[in-house]
Length: 139
Image (cartoon, rainbow, N blue to C red; front, side, top):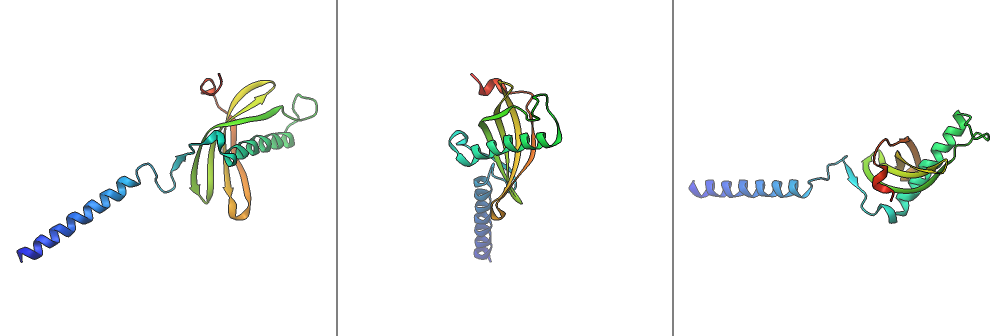
């Protein structure tokens, strides 16, 4: 009886250690959670998504508004993505911080793009000026 109890205790301890080891290994990588993209400046996919978000925003603005530039286009030119996070949802959702030129001034924008590679689609979900943080990326 004592031997059985000792084996049961040993198995229980091993199971707990195994579970704790797995939980510790996944710290910071929750399913569905955001993760940082570490190589933003050299990541061609992320830079292409930044360019797409600026161009798509400009295209949508052109469709909905006549701007003061006379030809109806907004003077917004992609510069680079300076920060990115990704989140696996029903596709991959990218949260981007994008530098772009607007009327000859560099501005920081926040962008959200959802990519579904299996259907070859990209969708701009959100694009707006960022109210803070530009000084971190421009020198």
